[in-house]
Image 1 (cartoon, rainbow, N blue to C red):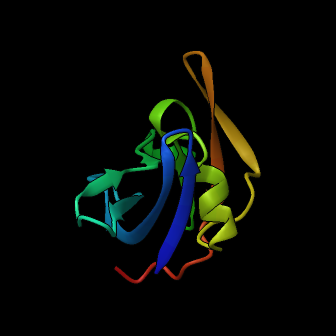
Image 2: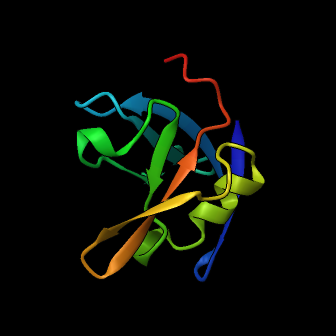
Length: 102
């Protein structure tokens, strides 16, 4: 599966892999198709009881700006249905549209 990320630095074609954080939450990892190097990890590991098994917290600020929309457009996640306050930012919580079989 691939997505396109249009950032202020350029347009990147990325492949997606999934993993698990130590607490069992889903991790999303993105890899640059041009060179195979890691590009970003748009998911965040949050407190254990804040997410359901089919939910993911997305970091959509700083260097990850625009990845939320890219993941929605690629139908990896749904639009945010909740937010978690973390310092000065609100972290979007989204339902995964991809079957969690990893």
